[in-house]
Amino acid sequence: MKIYLFDVDGTLTLARQPMPKDFAEFFVKFCEGKEIYLSTGSDFEKLVEQVPYNVLRACRGAFTCSGNVYHAWRDDIALLEICEDLNYRNDFEPPPELLPDLRCLLESSDCPVKTSNHIEERTGMINFSVVGRDCTQEQREEYAAWDKENGEREKIVSVLRKKYADLTFNIGGQISIDISPVGCDKSRSIPYLRKWHPGCSIHFYGDKMQPGGNDYPVLKELRERDTHEDVESYKHTWKLLDDKPEDGGKYAMSNIRELIAEVNPDALLADGLNEAIVGYGGQHPMIPVAVYDYDKCVEIFMRDNDWDWEGAIEWMEFNVVQAYLGPGTPIFMNKIDDDWDVTPYGEQKK
Ligand SMILES: [Mg+2]
Image (cartoon, rainbow, N blue to C red; front, side, top):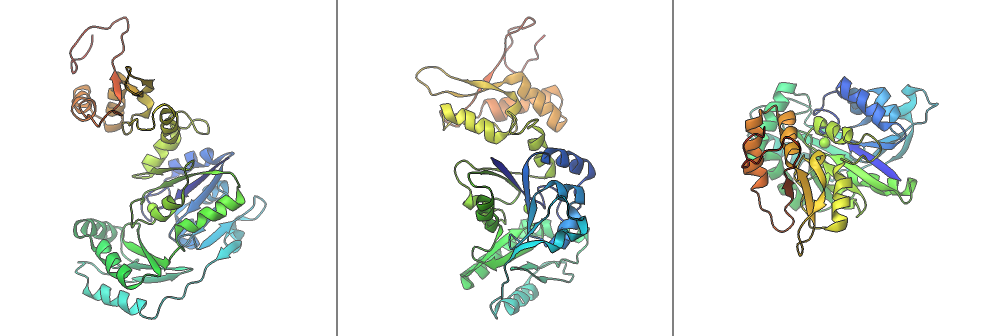
């Protein structure tokens, strides 16, 4: 059985923003007949600000506060009672020097904007933000860009890690750092899911899968037959889910990976071009590799990037076809049909 686990910020919504209405409608339909769980660094109060009730109801439950609290509900329970139905909680007493250290880091930060609400104690964790959680959306974006350039959160995390070996520090969302005891992070959800659904495979979607990101601990807990999708935005998630018209539709990256890996575990796939895969093939004695329809790839580039035909061909030639990445490199096939005319690559067929 398949279990789906979705991060919220950056995966189902823009950071700290409500889930877009059209995506929410799509997501509710996607949830039908599936076991869906949410996992967020935020608390339940913030979760309900972002995710509408009909979406929450379509899910089985939600892990909040970085996996330290779990909320579940049943169909016959009134919506407002949802938050009362806690299955477990993990309380965390921070070491006495931690809060003074965080204040010290806050004061010494060169960050150009500081607002208020920098240290938020949640169940099982502390959320630390130099710009402060009371910042406006504009200030939030400003800090995110400044942090990207200056690597402030990474520096803070490396300083704190050296001193507090019993704690984990994960960069989450756009502006903050999640702090919790080792093991009390988003990965906590995984043993529960395995316990509640024995024999299940877990399919995890998150936007912070890199080491130090708050989805990374979940990734580390996944096993061979589980899958994960490292998404760039809720739109990316939407596109991946939309590629699954039925449960596990043929364009899901995980399914294609699985199919091709059966014939060659070292076969490489081209990003975002799953729909153009026609199969696999090769020439003896080479091992089979993925085969793509060249024209379909061009169509996808035109559709997804609003490029004209020439732009898509140029990209395809220089960045896709000419990229040799070893013996697992895919084949890009030009089909022969009735109006086929022999042309060198890069010239439009008649
Ligand atoms: Mg996220």
